[in-house]
Length: 391
Image (cartoon, rainbow, N blue to C red; front, side, top):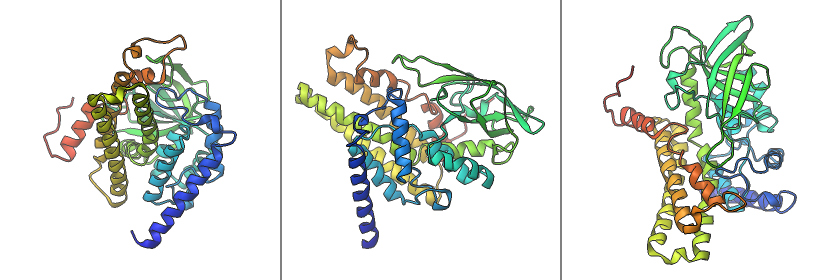
């Protein structure tokens, strides 16, 4: 990095830090730290207003190209913003799936008409999105999806069931992987469709979790309709588009995820210092290892972003999933250990933050692609080991 670029980045950091501090000192001050793991239900309307405030000030879609309404920020600047966002204690945003997953997918694979229709409303946080991938019989094995889509006149008719669909109860649209070739198997014959959620053919049923909240849902499509033009990429080539989305999910999106992780770790360290748990050398060692692990994740995320711009094997995202899922599940266990015996008892006000973190993070190694699937991807694509036998 030359001196000019370093100076520009330093100026960018100062502008971001100042804006966040000013914005979180006024009407949004009460949102600091809200909406973390297992707490995505918190202050949704207020966080939506905050996300739109970010958009109006030009702080959403930082890495999108300028021609698509983004800021065209460099990888370094995106990292800087996420660091400052974490430092400021800013709330978890509600537009993650649209801004960091579907938006980049449309930029990479969408038609000019699709980009013009959807990107501006993602950027301004006018429309929220959910992801229709997993099914009861096709969780981590995306190629086994059985939801079908058939052309009827000028529309796709979508029928099937999706599960573990985050925020489907709040979403306006869903990006759905469906089988459009009835005789196809595995990853052949799949298409990537954009389906409106507010219609009679879509039913959303909440799934209550151990935490008592319901961020996840079952979604039933029964002759749900969407326009024939709303297939991203070629018909039957949805596997490639879906993998592209997964790559974005584990690229820059992980920086936003780490904002919450860092906040959680800082909170556990503060608890350990206040209740004396930090005096235990074993606890201190575990806290230190957790800090090192988060730094490793951060470095890997930055390297993944660099790899995405220069080519690569594409398995960095699977490595990232293994890293963060085990780290975060371990953080939940550490939170309980630091809390001590009282962590085993629910108070009259319900679960506290650390109990909720522990319970919610038990599923981290399963959702978003199980550890077994990620290890298969790494072993086959990077290490060149024999492929696992598949039906």
